[in-house]
Length: 394
Image (cartoon, rainbow, N blue to C red):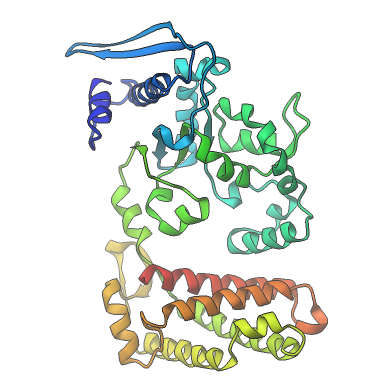
């Protein structure tokens, strides 16, 4: 605990080791939360003074009445928030049990420290669509449902300011989902846990998450996770190297690219039919660029087929494959007439975004698209996969 406080006060990084069963998690939580509470108290946030004193042998927390009769409201960026990361949500569930034993959390009526846990849409969506869709397909169905105002849970977010008291008690994703559905005893409320956690995290003192969220830039952007002025604790980081490596890597299979070509054809089919009536889409999608993209993807497939692929048991990849460093990719593209470069990447990225928007917009119009929703969703997923893969190159 002394080592944690020392690192926090000096604003240093620390690698700490403790045997199993020594209360490591509780120690990390108590020390970091006490440090944050000390800062909040000095800014007049509580009616008690919490003075942290330390020596070589022990640490003491002293409580005394503050001269301030009314606590001041503290803006989020005036104090460091604690981001506690572990490998999985199952491990975070154990962390939450320990967190509930911390003095400042147990006395939530007085200290009102806010805690949230971040998860994926797959884990936190409580709408019925979650039973039928996952991943990219769920993301797109969620977007359509929200746009049409058909999600009672997302509509309930307008009352989130009334629900902040719920976040003074640490919750795992299962508990949070049940409360969002309106199944909590004494709570007649409905709200979307996925968007609620994103909205409230900026006000929270403690944020819990799996640590792959920290390393994946795209995930941080989706969750609006700001690491500035944060105490970042990575617990149980045994496979952190693999997670970091995966965060800056991408995979492309010829099956993904073939499906992407089908998505291109679907885009052209719909575009031809709405070209005269949807001027907004017409301005966003240039047909000539679609044909250039089609040639580039075909060239990429040809290049893949000509490669000498092999299995590598050490990398634990089942398929035959070949690994390249990111900096080599654009050189390979140039040599093989694959017209995707650093200079035109933004245009390429915007084109893929517009394709997804077009397919989303006309998903339910079968007479126009001549495609069922399932196929269009597959096409959207393939475009999104290619989009994310190439984004990782940059």
